[in-house]
Image 1 (cartoon, rainbow, N blue to C red):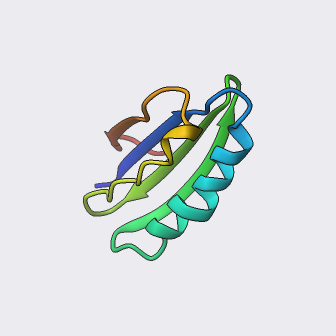
Image 2 (image 1 turned 30 degrees about the vertical axis):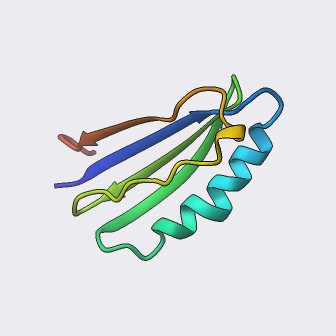
Image 3 (image 1 turned 60 degrees about the vertical axis):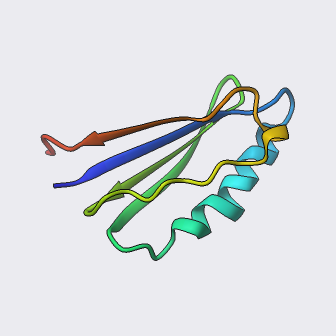
Length: 86
């Protein structure tokens, strides 16, 4: 069974690049090499949003919170269980 953990943050106005860099430089290295981590991807989206999706064979590790000054609102987190893959 695979669990996908999604972490999404909206940057404070004008700080999307800094938030993206924080994810790449802090959050990704904090997860890299963790037991059960199968894959991770970083996405950006309109509205100054940054999304980190991780896939796990074990229980997902939590993604740390970025510095508050980078955020336009609190971080959102969801976990999903894979039911079907083609």
